Length: 117
Image (cartoon, rainbow, N blue to C red; front, side, top):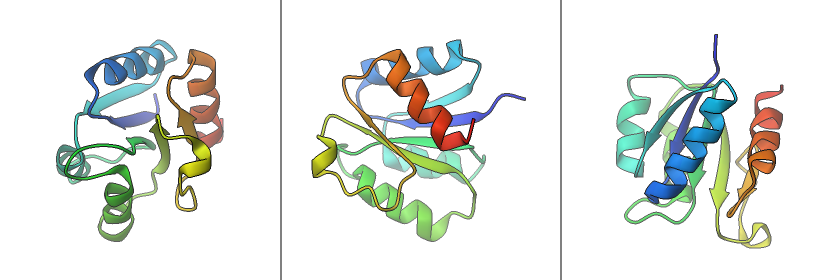
């Protein structure tokens, strides 16, 4: 059975690119454009991995991560995906980091590492 991945990003082009790469590699992918929709879908479905953009309006990736860790009981791995340089990102609570813009290989390497593949 394919691993389930949720991608949360307010940039439509990044969502489509990420989804295409992941689905092309055999993953089942859901996408949402903001943190509120992520919280809604997480109430209904469990994911093996969640990719979070850091810079989103209303609810940042940092805020969304904190809420998910506090309120949603699941075992998903979480990875930040961001244009913000890694040196400027607090990555204590996540299982990986993908720097935008990314290559197919760099995205898949981080995803596989986070999933223990």
